[in-house]
Image 1 (cartoon, rainbow, N blue to C red):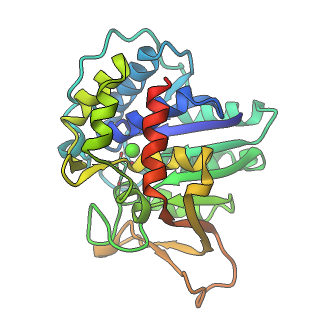
Image 2: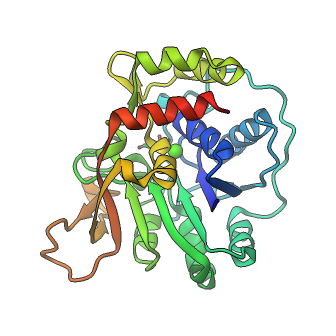
Length: 301
Ligand code: BDR
Ligand code: CA
């Protein structure tokens, strides 16, 4: 099993990602940490606890940063709803958060792990940037960062910036300069990784889990049932268990910090301006195989 920490801001696509990760036989979720992003951090933390409780898991949850490092939070409630996970009435929460901050919890978890840990941020990189800045000794026991964020072409929040890197570009820059191996699962693959009506109708039949997702999907404005629901964060989990679904390339990624491109991930794909690389970026995904992967994983929960 691959030991992982997921840093998240649920978020309806986060909810699918967490549900699959928490129940996947190849993954060992050591810790869930939360951050402000799609909605404020109190809500993303509550949503994470709702999901952990729903699945009867006891994975520790730690609450993280309530705002980006230097700029104001711009949330994404118009996509995920006011609560961040609108559309389903979850049963009462049975789990509590740890008494320590997410960054402390990550540090402890990484330093205590007998095996190197993979970090899986599917939200703004604020917590991860603080972790590598405050506790650089953790880098030795971080295997890699597999993140959902960034784009090699256009953005979804501003012309060229994807939401997670747009929310906290300074954090993204710290992480991309950290020398930790990074796999960037960006919009280039995640915007095409959709669930269509066909998959959603199958998922609906999967008992209590199917009913939960079917309800959330009615409120998710990350696409439509006609064009498909974008499963951004779910792609990062699919990469962990089935990297063969993705085409990747090593390159150097810079982060734009200011102006209309702030938050853009600018990749030197032809390596004209750099002679070292700092990330592997996803260029393509096998969409039918991904769709099957999502459906079969939700079915087997
Ligand atoms: C990313 O932004 C968030 O709204 C989603 O949860 C995902 O992490 C996609 O750009
Ligand atoms: Ca997210």
